[in-house]
Image (tube, rainbow, N blue to C red):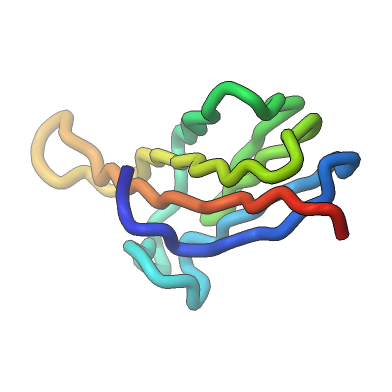
Length: 104
């Protein structure tokens, strides 16, 4: 996986949302002001449950539950935008976030 752009700490009993603002200040690739996300895919490791995911304009989100205490998970979010780089080839970016599960 790629370099981790953000780390989240959660409790094993949490149902939680992780969001990425692709124009925000987090480390990693960013979208141009006139660029919008057209597709988003999350890669979620075993041991944590994906309940839902979404995207709009320059933001993506995922809702997760049932993480295992003591585990650290890396999730990647790959997006495709409306910026056509060459005929039929669109701007594609990826970020990785880390989830550390501990009793809070």
